[in-house]
Length: 192
Ligand code: GRF
Image (cartoon, rainbow, N blue to C red):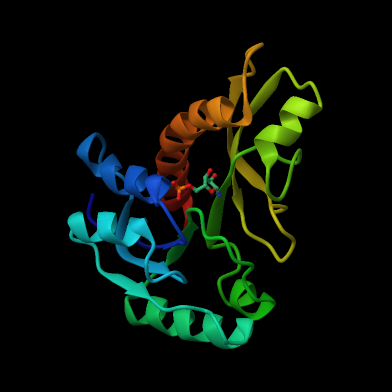
């Protein structure tokens, strides 16, 4: 496919979803190409993984910086790489309203719950405590409100009797790795 959408992935840690997004081109011909992986945590493991894929990386600690100032710097870097779509993949920091406004409708996030249930952190423990039958993950468009924008894709995972937050997280993560590349691909294909 000729005109692939240029994607910037934002991470803060392990980066296994970013890795799944990057891996996808080995099994499909996605409508996206990752041109930059950026992080607010310079020691994030995902940066090492990205470099192994030959993807350019940018990292800068947000510590001691105003949120808007940090986001402006990251925005410049994304534009320098002609990024068209942003994929949050374990980016553990709220984005400033200014940043979200500049990229409106072009930022996706993956969240480990069946949104609108269990926004925020600690989703698996909360789902278990509530006695849910299913957990899962969602890909949604990012808006100013945390984990709140329109959901574009979801996968359900059955909760088993002996599940712990850790065992459930592991099975949900495996679904995230399948869901996110396919959702980003479809999103980019349908974007003008
Ligand atoms: C994933 O569970 C994702 O859904 C959530 O943060 C975690 C990031 O994991 N937003 P990784 O860095 O992609 O491995």
